Length: 440
Image 1 (tube, one colour):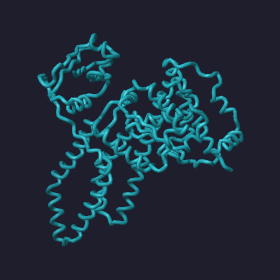
Image 2: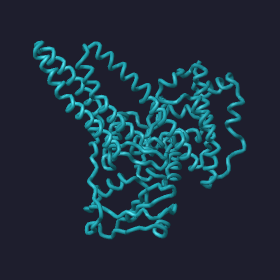
Image 3: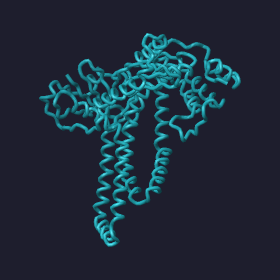
Image 4: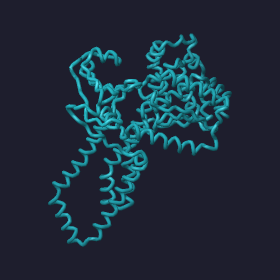
């Protein structure tokens, strides 16, 4: 049996609850409701809506008592007051290749038009320009329609995220996300197949214990339970860890050298898991496609009007402007978002989140010691280490309060932040040499 409940919250905020047998109710947007209905095994035309209550609710039992609801026992027989069509989503494989295809198509069209126009006689060129002037209303109308369609497509694919309180533009539905996740997971496994750490290795067991602790403590969070969490450890000195969108955790052995204890390691893993829980990969793919569609016409126009060498230079300049003013700030914003949610994930698992400040303080110290390159913040995909250190320290009291409310035991009275900040730069350098991070 399926239940669709439309709930009105305080301040006229509308949210939809959707549940089924043995399924935890989740809050989602109207577009998600329509998507879930359209992709269910039942043939559904519509469902009932109630906006008459202004009582704030927290769970399904309160909803049934305090709001006007209608339980739809037999969807295939239900007559409803409205209907919806299945939303149009992009195929998973196409999502990976569509961006370069759009750019290449725009380039080829522009150059083809330029060659065609150059082959015309002066009289034919004048005749063509007269035709353009005569049809300019239709041309501008077509361009306007193109951008309106893009906007409508964007607006109908926005999904509300309860953890961040913002809307995300995501092109893929749940089935397509799963296919794309499997495709990327298989690709990564194949790439590292020869250097996988065996599951019987003590380090694998240690990482498995930490990740299981994080997962089990956060299964009630939105988007957490539907991930198929796996752990893969790569026998490589590379200092990196990431989580694929489906929940596949990859940790390189070099990462363990960068952390002093399990709490710091848990904070790093929680940050990467937050990216997956917040669907950042799907969002980045989706936004990249819509940006390419917006830029397709300008790219075609540049290649059609200017000589090839100048057109290439203008495209590089334009791409740099887009990167500096959109792509890189957006990437840094996602990292900051993952920092915040990752801290909450770690806190809920009773990790000593104070170690997050120490970790980023260490990364900042490596920059101060010239071990790590000092990147220009506004030209980087990640926030500056020192900025992350300060920001996490500012929100830590709130995170510690959240940890306490989660029923975690009290932390040690020895604050690792105080110990870290008492050391001089020379003492930090000596400790980093002992850990093998600095080799000079």
